[in-house]
Image (cartoon, rainbow, N blue to C red; front, side, top):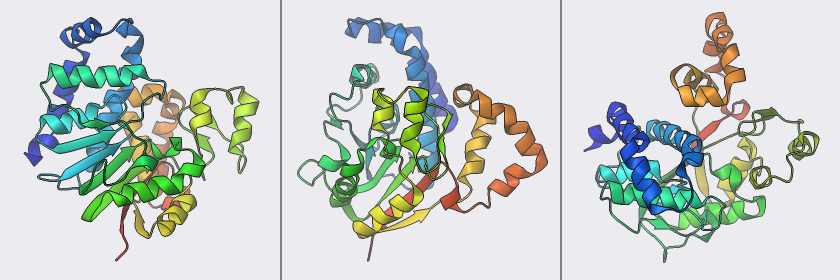
Length: 291
């Protein structure tokens, strides 16, 4: 089973089915809005699910219980379910993305997947009465959207539902580096919120959702929850390498793509693999209970 889960060619085939006219017609038959307006967003979710799958490759998830924080359209969770993983997800209702729930419901029925796997809750709401004995919790570009005052409760909530020996894997921006990837904007150093004012986006829901989490904030949150944290190295180089391999990701970061050949052939990309995690964005880190 594990080999099939992490077969990127098979996952790409799954993605092609989600882009097919058959699936889109099925989706359209279930909703009142015009689904075509969400095709671009679906492409982003598909791309993120492929990236998330690569992050999970180092883990043995066969016969394990896994929980995705902030499933969005639920594509990665759906893929795991399709391959027999005991996969669950959380996504709070009322996040402003009605099509997320619609899409996951359609994917679930289109592929005859197990039902009732998405829990209506935020990370800070997690407790053993909702779900328990989770072997691996993971998220991709979600932690930066948890309100700052809720981050300690989110870390405590996630910890509370872990099985003995379980852990967490999270991937998100490190705003110690003054760059905002959602808007593709350089930030005013030490005053990131000021950028929103200067660019006129501070009233937008996406901007207001950002907490500008940093490497040092993660370390503080981990210590506060009695969790050991380990950061992966060389991720800035990996992020740039995605520009060469991932067309959807590259289209979102077309300005950075123009610099990629310079980085690659000058040796700067090689040097990036040795930059300390504290000075890299994005960041990926693994958390486990302190023993």
